[in-house]
Image (cartoon, rainbow, N blue to C red; front, side, top):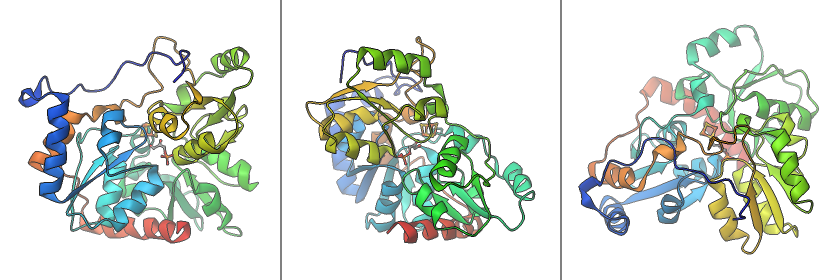
Length: 331
Ligand code: 13P
Ligand code: SF4
């Protein structure tokens, strides 16, 4: 990573103080041992702490993690991400135990779209196909026709040509989809990601002046003030692939800064600069929900098989259909 990267303190709930008096090395050994004893698989998102990514069996974006959850033959899934991701894994695997390091790891997009309000909003759009970003609760998925992630949203909406469509809950991803598909008739739920809305266009341009050869790459959850300067817009896995394959040597990366760990491993020797948030004193480019997960909590969830994620069966069955529709379209 470059010296220009802002110093990013760890935010969120810290690990329990010296849990069981184990060092990080002992925690890592314990996690490996418990994983084998439980026949567990550890799935981790690119926004997790680097120590957790390095221990995981699979690290990926939201779509890849759903696909990995759908095909695993482990008895236990330890999901290192946020709640809606683990919930999706449980919806796909009702007979497996799904544990998370921290049950409180939420998401501003999911939290900003409560199912009762969403149901009332949908009443305004009869006859519309409901396309919902995977960053939502199981109850909201159950009200949807098809789920999408940032890596397939454009493809899915293109596949719905001729149908009236609504999109929720991320208005910036929705605006990006409208632009890419040329459809300006799609009503958007007004949700945002607290991380991606925090990036500063002014500070981004100042950084670009200092690094004129750098390419700006951005996640589509960013607002238009960032996306209009991006050479490439993609999901987390798409951004890593681009940084690896592009001949460019320096990138300004506008997404959660946890991605830099895997991006640097896949693009060795390249200079990666984290895009700056609006507030210089804030580590706002780290997701406080993702950061709730720690090695110690991962150890404890594998040891105790708690906390578990569960979904009531009637909701699970309704939520499964739009997820499966997405997986079929993304195969
Ligand atoms: P992707 O991993 O699908 O790019 O999504 C990013 C994100 O914000 C997950 O919460
Ligand atoms: Fe949700 Fe944003 Fe955190 Fe992703 S980065 S989990 S969209 S709050």
